Image (tube, rainbow, N blue to C red; front, side, top):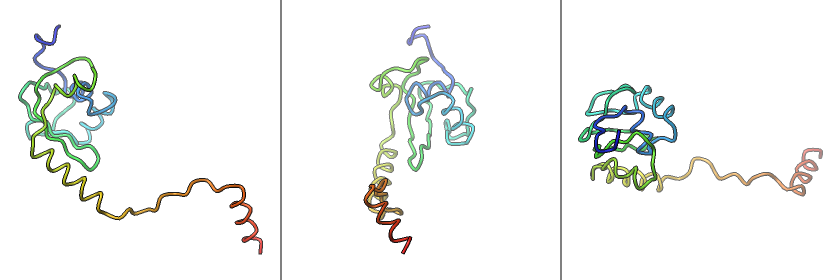
Length: 130
């Protein structure tokens, strides 16, 4: 079947081909977990996706609302995958706003200094033994 003849494809395959998830099993797990909706309804992994469907995908803290522009059976390059959907302007704006808000928050944990050097480890041991 060529791309022009293909009109529908399984939701988990489409999410994988559109590069929202790295594997089909991750896409299926997200669908089963309720993180994906098609046309406002909770979807199952075998749901057929057609051109014009609105898919809502929650990835971590961010939410993507996209309109399906094409379907594919195979996973292609990122440029080909980006042609399979069009993200709504409201979704892009909401994600950038969320990103800016998260960037302004103080980090909950200070970055780890890493593994102590031999000198620092010996100094700690001396301090403990005193």
